[in-house]
Image (cartoon, rainbow, N blue to C red; front, side, top):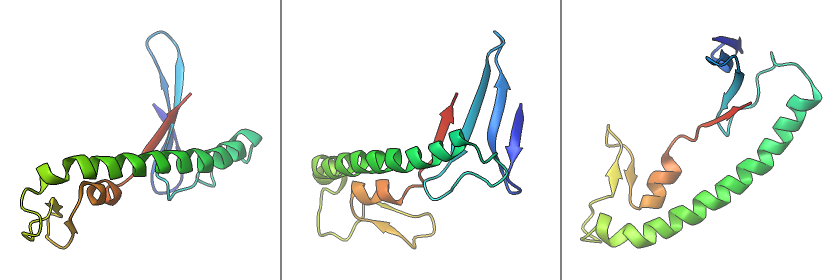
Length: 115
């Protein structure tokens, strides 16, 4: 497996599958951009522009789903609303998640693309 190194972490990997197919994968997070070590090509620039629109669409769908899931599961996840008992807390107790939506919004968003 070969990768493109941005100095901190390998973000693009190339894998040769058993049948000889070469699969390239790019891993990102919504707050990251492609590393400067990738070529300044039309395809890479197009990917950056298209990924912004794609992320916005995914964000809208995730927010809608999280709202609905919080509504549907709210009573189940917090049977004694107002009891002061959150749906979830962080391991160190510093963060309280009062709704399923807050749990979803608080998670790290990861992306990966294959070609």
